[in-house]
Length: 447
Image 1 (cartoon, helix red, strand yellow):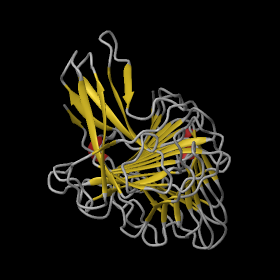
Image 2 (cartoon, one colour):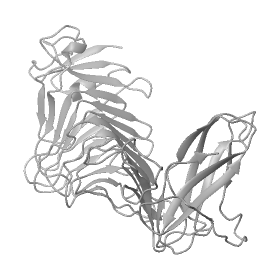
Image 3 (cartoon, rainbow, N blue to C red):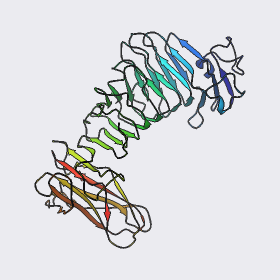
Image 4 (spheres, one colour):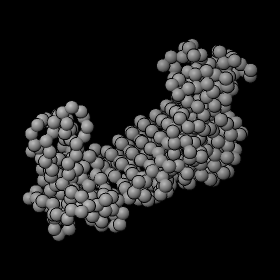
C-alpha cells in the first residue's frame, strides 16, 4: 500500500510522492496503482476538464479499495485526521460532459460538479461493472446546468449493474433543473446528511429505477429531504418489470411533498417510510404497495392502545379497489412483542375497527404470528386466525368491546400458540378486502 498526493497547483510531470511533486488530476493519480493505495487531495485542489472524465480506480479490489481523502495541504505529512477537509473540487464543463467512477473506492471530502450552462445535461455515474462498491463521505454531487435534466446514476447508466453498492454519508446533491433525478438499479444507501438537497431547483421526482433494471434498494437514514415540497415526489413510478424497495428511516421531509406514487405491480415496488416527516413527532409510519396504503392515525385510536408515550395512535389501512385478494393480501409491518413463557399456551390479540357494518370475515383480515415453536432450533413457527385454506368457508372474526375514538364496527384478531423458547414474537396483520379502510391498533397483547 502506497500513498500519493494530488494537487491541481503542482507542476506538471510529478510522480505524486510529495505535495511539490503531486499529480495534477485524479485521473493521472489513479493510473497503474495498486489495491489499498491512498490518495491525499489538497484542500485547494480544483481540477476542471472541458470533456467527460472517468475516474478509474485501477488495481482496486473488492476487499481493498482505494481511499481518496481531501486534506489540508499545509497540515501534517503524512496527513492525520485533523487535516481532513471537504473543499477539493473535480469539475467538468460544457455540454453533456459527465463524471464516471469505476472500481472500488472510498472518497472523503470531494465536490464533484458535472456540466455547465443551459446545454443538455451531464451526469454523474457510479460504477461501470457489476460487483463493485463505491462510498462517498462528506462529498457533494452537483449539477450546475439549468436547461436540461441531469441524472445521478447510482448503479451504472445502463441499468444492468444490479450487483453494485453505492453509499453516501453526509453527502449532498445539487440539482438546478426539475427533470433531474436519481436513478437506481442496485443498492443505494444514503445516511446522515443534513440539508441533503442544496440546488436551486429540486427534482420533480427524486428517485426512480433505471428503465431496464430488474430491482434495487434505496435506503435513506437520517437524510434531510425537506427541500422537496409541493409538486415534488420522493419515490417516482417504476415499470411492471421492476422490483424496488424504498425505505426512509428517521428522515426530515416537507409536509407538502408527495411521498410516492402508487406502485404498478404486486411484486414491484414497496415503499416504507418510518419515523420520518415534517413535524417533531416520532410515531409516523407509511407503507405504500399496490394492494394498500398504510399511514399513522391519531384521531381514530383505541383507548389504552398503542402510544408513543404521549400520543395514542393506530394504523390506517386503505386497501386498493382491485389489486388485493385473499391470495394476495396487503401485509402490515410486523408488531414485535417479547415472550418469556416456554411450554405453555399464549394468546396474541390485536384490536381493530372499520366501517363495514359487521365484523370482517377471516378471509378479509386476519392475524399471522411468527414465534419460536421448537426447542432445538430458531426455526420460526406460524399460526394465524385466517380461514384454513382456499376451500374453507369464510367465518366472521370476533367482535370486540374495546373503546375506539371513531369508525363503527370493532373487532379483534387473535391466535393461540405454545412457544418452546423465549424470544420475540412477530404479529402481522393481513388485509384482503378491496375498497376498505381498517384501523389497526399496533399493540399486540399476550395472555
